[in-house]
Length: 422
Image (tube, rainbow, N blue to C red):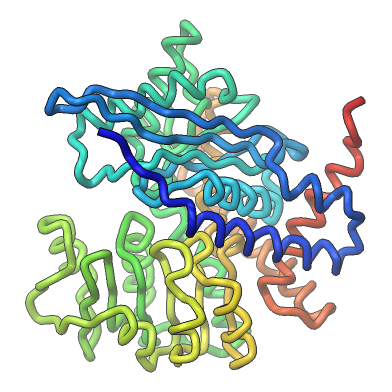
């Protein structure tokens, strides 16, 4: 058994991320040396992981760990298990993590890991074997002061506990801060659950106040219903928003009166899909993004909003919860149509903020109370939004360009002061 990696989408994403970086570097007046260095990751490890499958066959899985930038501190980034994973895509996501850490002033650089596999068709035993083999192979380049993985698409807190355990075996003692996103029982932090959703809500509430949007009873469409999507739906519902439609990989569901989010989550958890949920209408992705609502939130995979469906979007505010959820062409179309688009590196940075909190608490061997965590968290997300808004207003640029100017400028400043090794 051997997986086959299709790198075509990864190449497209890499080219988009780097082209965008070059444009912003030009606005910042950065010299070519910065651009050349930011286009290339500092470290890349390519792996081929053999494991014994449940049927007795040997599976060999392509895998990577990419450390894009280490100038602001150890690198930080999730590990993705997905059949579309590729090297170029992993490099692109690692670069986005560099911008994301910098925008919220977290002293990390960006990294990303990926294994080309389909975890949905693998047993728990097969996934654990794969995780432990991957940990074994990347152990020389990860560590609390080197590179700190976290969960991402296809991985979870159990995956992180297994990585921590494997790494700790090599070290000869427990090393909880080698990863973040762990269960609380092995050093995880309070407040880590739904961190992306809560961070997104802090930013969205600021935008709503400034743009005179009354969130209570506002209409929302949510594209993607994994861990992040469920958290976003839950928090939107608690705020009083009416979520008219939600989609997952099986398709979408729609209710003109608004979906009962608790019932939707229960149905998804029980059936593993949204398809066929009683009391809802089926809706495809093209119909979903074109619904006449106040807010659209892409929270699935990259480029689900693209040049083909961007012209049909009626929502006035688009919140890019997924990493690279909106293609560059789609961004231009939406901006030209006067849509207010909140970019991924801003609105989904809550995950890395809470990861940083967990890492700090592990280093201190002292854990904070939930109220203290939430106060610090809200302050960082709100302050970051207003820093971005200030650049947007002063430079007359889009929210995304302002966010990238802030982030890339901070990375370039760190590179300038640290200089070149001989």
